[in-house]
Length: 391
Image (cartoon, rainbow, N blue to C red; front, side, top):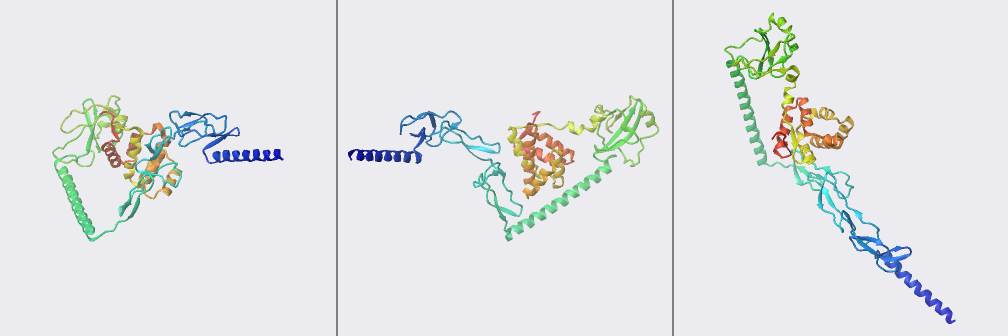
């Protein structure tokens, strides 16, 4: 009987100890290793060697650089610190007890209740809207229709009248300038004159602006020189009086050259090949270099919102984006400037190291979008994103 009672007491004690051990491990104070409950290592460390006795602390080692553990743990290695993506900025750096904290860069956001695989561009309010809540790293811009009162209506009316008067004045000045130029100059401003020169013979052709062409085979000449013309005593008829019988004699000579001669001076600027003349404008473009690497290029994308909407598809096809990407952007973004920004981000990821601001400007020029190209270049320099390479 005494023996039976001793066995019951031993069984009760064993059950109680097992329950206490299970409770400690299940509450997160410890962890189980080879059937033994070991105490956790503190935050910022990891288990180097597990314990050999119940409720004994393991051998803990400090986390190495760029690794961490935020809580007491029983893991055999520290966790790797998170790296911020290119579209994010660092808020809190990583240390041994805390992971890196990143957030979307200014002008973009990620909703906290959604997986943030890529930051979205903040919405821009329309002209008839006003900002209710500005965009943050965790929320998009909130807009509402602008309410116009009597004062604002009167202000708009005054501004409209002033703008209309200014437009009339500008048009009047332009017409006056054109009329004066015709009366005082043989050739209007922007008119150029081409002279086919061979020995003592001089045969003249006309070129209007920088896009004109020579008449009657004059393009076959191997050299041209570009010089500006200024006025003579009277205006010459539109009829070509310079290309006479000597043209055939001139074009037959392999040593002949085309010369654009100024009316104020017979001295010309120098000789160029025909190919150089056709590409003169492109060779004069000054190359821009980013002030802050890829970040400068990415910030400049907002400036391309001023491109004429009618040229959007042609421009994006020209820089190498396919129609599928363009259609997807049109369905995803209602505002044209948002579509431009997103498509340029796709272009930058596609091009990688070859992505170049100068390429975008040259492609705009090839579409005859000179005003947009010049405005974007000026704003990129003014904002400090780019500078000229030769400065």
